[in-house]
Image (cartoon, rainbow, N blue to C red):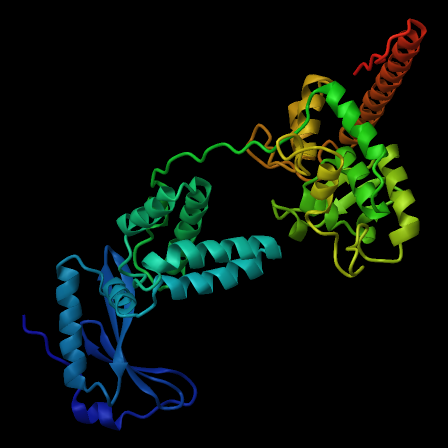
Length: 431
């Protein structure tokens, strides 16, 4: 049976709008002219693909005449007969015709993600640096529609050849996220993000931050901190670091408004945390004492440990590190980050606290039996008890170190007196 079209060129030209509703004039085989209430005319086609009804635009009249609309209809029907979805093909053709590069998509992704998640400045700087230094030089100008997993594999391999394995790992995560973002925003057809994640990299060499974990040495460190003769801000930061074992950046950015004296907790906002989530630090009696001591000096400022140059800025990131060096501890012995390893080791091995409590207090991701991350207030009462026990233990280790030092001093003096009594020319000096 031969199909007979229903519309004529003159009928299309003379068709008038209905001010009350959208008008549709059908030509047959799914093709119809849609007229808006204001008189705008556009060609539409209804078709079926995989037993589902689909609709697509074929153009605006009079730019697209009746004859041209029928021609486009036939092309669509041929594609359907060949098992091709015309709407999906149009979407792909549109994407492949764009000129978005990996760099342009990456910049858009960076602005979106950093704004949505409120990245801290340090993290934003780190991500931006990896993009600009390690990704853009090799794939930055490649069209996002043309980039492939092998392209990124070669790029990551170049980073590995520099011995920067951790940077390569981070670059892979960033590149994967950028490629997936390109698809969700309609700039790329295929999501190669999951394929990028599967790229095998050399494992980064473990970097162990120097830390003191021997109980006797910890006691001597606590004694040395008590004897430190630097500024009150740096000394207070040194005293609080082992009691809270937060990250150095979290410590120096501490603000008075974050301290809840009544509940004895310090709440660090997510934008300051590596995890991006709020973190609660239960404050022991000793920690509160440190805060009260420093409050009379910096209580009128925002930061608990302000910079020596301006109270509007936090203490320098090297302040605690320099203090440790001035106390005689080398970079191979102790760092500001080392207080975390110290606490984790002794809380586990000496005081035998549950690992999940320790990990939670370290602000590491801890998950329950169902794979859900514990919330920030989980086991808060037990964590309070743990932090007080920890502070008491540090006092005990410090007192043992003090007694040991006093004993050695007494023994040294006694030996010298005994040498003098015996008439020894060069008195014995014991260590």
